[in-house]
Image 1 (cartoon, rainbow, N blue to C red):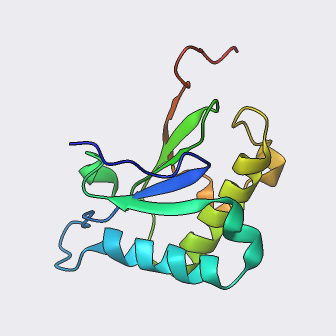
Image 2 (image 1 turned 30 degrees about the vertical axis):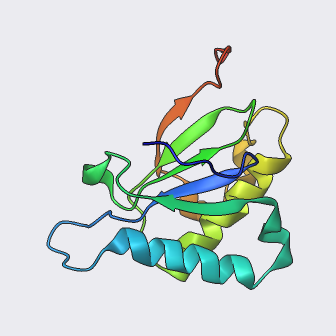
Length: 130
C-alpha cells in the first residue's frame, strides 16, 4: 500500500534496519538522529526526513533513499545510527536539494557519506548521461 508523502527533496530512511547481532532497530535510531540534527539547524529545513519500513537493503543497514522530483535518486547505506552520520547525510542532502539534477560535485561531499552510496536511479522519463 502506498501512502502520500511530501513531494520535495526528502531523505526516506528505513526505520526497521537492524545490523547483524543488534537487537535494537538501528534504522529507527538513525531516523531519530536525523530529526534531532535537522531540528538543531534551520539550513536543514530544505529537506524532509521521512521514514518507512524496510527498503529491502538489509545487508547494508542503516539505509536511506535520497529523492526529489526530476532529480537523480540515490540509495545510501552502511551508516552508524549517530549524530555524525546524520549530520553528514543532511549536509549532503542540502547540496542535493540545491542542485539542478541531483548531482553534487564530489568536492562538496561530506566525508561521512563517501563510500556509502549503493545505487543511483534516474527520475522517471530520464536516463543519466555519462
